[in-house]
Length: 250
Image 1 (cartoon, rainbow, N blue to C red):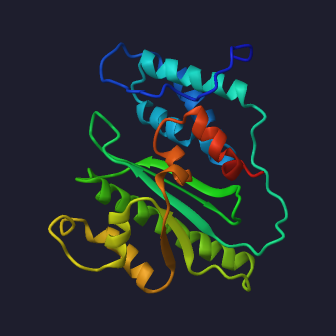
Image 2: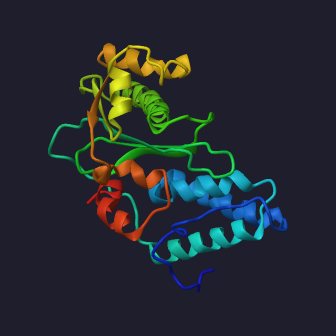
């Protein structure tokens, strides 16, 4: 693929993997996806969603998965110079995060996708990011967003502990988390059991505890400005151009 024709997007915009098709040799596919996971984890947050999608089919990959992996390699060919840029900041560092979810994104099992990212400066680049399928089926967009917010809160607590070990004098609390769903924000701030939310598992309600203790603050962010949106669905060229400055640094 070193001489392949480059692509401007990592995957098709309406990508859907069905359960049909002939199983291919998994060895080469696993080698490609393993290398892509390494690249995504270290330097390329824009690959998170598609790499997460490809890694769900390591056991019995089919031709459709192989074709998607090759398109991703063509995208890397066209963006091979894209990299994280960390530089000294004139302003004090402040941990901020973006949390998002794509409700019932998987058409096979209807599970949602969680996406979050964190930065220490207002203009990036990101220092932590993740895209993964949620372990349970959410019954509404609000519930999916709330579950994503719980994962984001967990990561924020870990990063606060890590940063305190690096610099004991730096202020890290509360961590500002941007969320684009008003229902999830209300659910995390108002500890009232309602008909629509009383079934939500108790393990996700520690978001309320973290908010009440002042460990996090949750701020509304319009969907158009939600950086974590690129971690929950196929990346478009328009979104990449809009958010690449924050993801990789100016």
